[in-house]
Image 1 (spheres, rainbow, N blue to C red):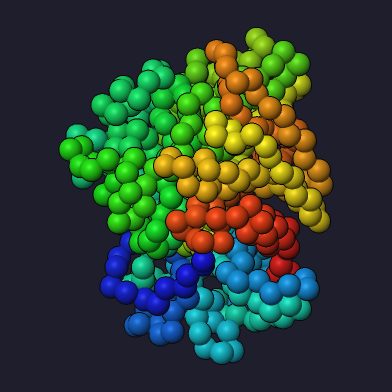
Image 2 (cartoon, rainbow, N blue to C red):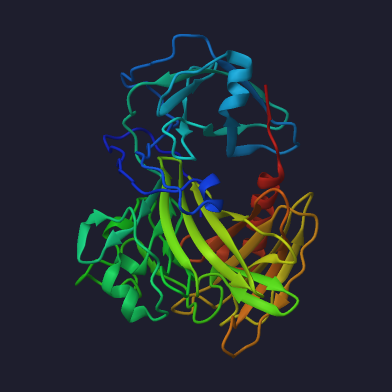
Length: 440
């Protein structure tokens, strides 16, 4: 799964209007609703400005340094608006920005509104830096969208009218494929980048599945259409490559208490919100209201983000009551008998690698956690609850619980045919995640 940088094309970004959305703050006040327009915010690496309309009246600059001993390619970085304004004063509204260095090759950045108030909250971009390298960028906020090819995408659509993307729909209470197939294209919301794609079963199962990709193009919009070809067989873009059954699949959520494991999804109200859909990062929220575990009621927000060029998605889990529980995620082991752990500096991982793709191909899956050590347990092979899963339990603190779910399919990259090849990539991605750039 190689990372690809695209030059500008005539492709335009999709803009979606979302209503009845809830912010992170509203998670703990489910009755409060925001009516807002979600901005599609973005910025890309381009050789020419292509006539972009610049909207910044003042000089804004940032310096980004790589303090590590390793080179970083398309390293993702988030800069809070408050941090930028502390140095540069009040900044204008916008949807995009260029970061222009002394080599005059602009890097695109997204100005993302995360809480739905119509004002951008943070700048997201990706930069490449050699070891110990430092670059200074001038920030130019744009009034118009640049013409560029999308490298991330969100899709949640009505199976009976694929032109209608869903903005609000309660999670189904059923737990069978036949029901979710009646309502949604590929059974629920999906997210992808130029490397891999995922989908969520938007019902009580709340499982997560994988689409292996052999193209860098966005494919979810045309996947799983009513009357169309099945995604369980190889197509020009790839195919569904995972068998989930009653496991946690590819990073689904559960909770652990002294009495056992509890899947997140059944017996609560679930909803969906598109937070950001941009060319280099897209974000969705899966909200759960009235989750009941050991007699306690609480709310959960599962924020899922996917970034250009990365073989993983990121999860952030917000829980309104953290007493006596841990957040659990895992990897299905339906066709894998062993897992491997990888320790790094400030980050730990576990992974499987076996003939576990849908047609028996080699498939590696990994959970990367930003903590010093990781403990892995095994769910039962059968029973009424969560089964056939290698899982880890993470403590709930003041900050959201975060982890990354990584995928390596041999048809996407021949390096993933071997366990060692996948392990080396897990180690690299974990190092990159653990490396913090310095912004001034």
